[in-house]
Image (cartoon, rainbow, N blue to C red):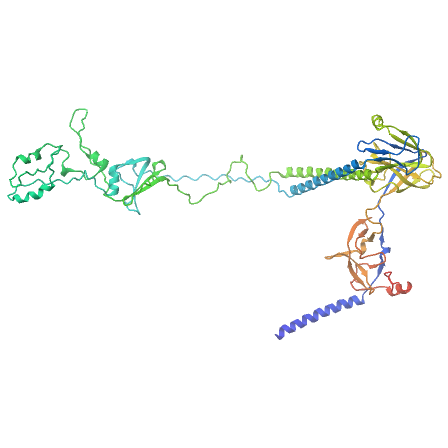
Length: 626
């Protein structure tokens, strides 16, 4: 017990010592810090460059659109209009339906992309087909010769049929080999049951012997038959006068002729069909000789009752499998004859495919595609995914354009001028000409094109910067119109940041101060695309961000003028050097330390914090009131 307590105390002292050492090291360590505003930047969006021309006579033209229905026109030909005046109003119901349709189309394209990516993953995880190795077939074993049948085959079983085995008991019955249509004779059945044929064993009546005692005869009278029979019996008939001695006349019937072969004392000891066959009968041969007696059998079954079993084997060979069998017991015979016996195998063996015919296909446990086929399928699927990604982008662009059309359902004048022409829609559509034209005559305008990727990021009212090649001056212009239709072709220069295969849309910007510009002068134009994030987001220099198992963190100066590990949430990276800070745990006024090096310890003191506090008259290094 004392030993356990001692160990616990030692461990506690070690832990305490390590904690004190670490805290002491952190308490004595100092680290340099930097204000967040000095090591961060802001992101205002991407810039894009294009090329355009200055014109002094700008014309606003409106073409008929099959997908839009005009609900009202607010001007007529010859009216004077200013920038911002309403020209016409499109039906918003149809535009709203178009937006919903484009939204569904975008969802459909995204679903198709997701399914294709799942199919690609499945193909990449599919093992290739490997042809099974078919071993050489093993030589068939030499069949074991079947012994020849030693039993006699019976189609008719008599009392003289010899079983090929058995003792006639229930445990070891007589077994006969027979055919399926074998029959049993009467003689056999009597032997089986242990019954003697009464016709084969008659009991003769004794012949009366003359006696001097007349009183002995009346005792024989009741047993005699008073009526004469057709076939006289060998016994003598008693006379009506029992007191008289018998005379030769009454005993004459004993000499009456009877069939010689049927002597009572010569009755056969067998019964049934065999008995019938053993009877002596006259058989006249072709030469007219005397009758031939039936030969005596070699074997006779013993008197029953006994048990017999009858079996039908394949190829009529008792050494081959049993086909049918039935059994009869002379002591308890029943009618359940000829019951089929279905022999059940001891072990069910499944078919062996190892020696299967090579021409027969069977499951190999993998896919049915070879490595080359899988490689081609994966390549095709990747190409399909690329096409689907473009379809998703196009669907998103179409949806954004439909939303812009809905937002811009009210068309306003982009120039100060006069409505030059206003024709009906059918005429304009048949001649592919504008149905409404407004001609302006004051100021200069810039006509240029922007990439479709900037739709939704560049809006009417945004400011663009233009520079002249001829006079070197910079001009500020406001976008007054963005076309709803893509250009047929583009002759405008881009800086290469946009996809050259994508569509372009014409826009017009009005220059307020056009000093030095000439009609047709070429201009370089810079477009500032709006950022998706708030302009006040902080993008911190990535070197001041570190990560561990808990996530990304910075060493931020706390209220005690010591740095502490503070976890942050981050977003996208810009310029390959700055990482977006999405959490509210860090502001531009905070101070952070470089998180690497021996002095970058949680709890280390921030260098020169006291001097910074004095220099800022009560404002500490974090920008807070002291």
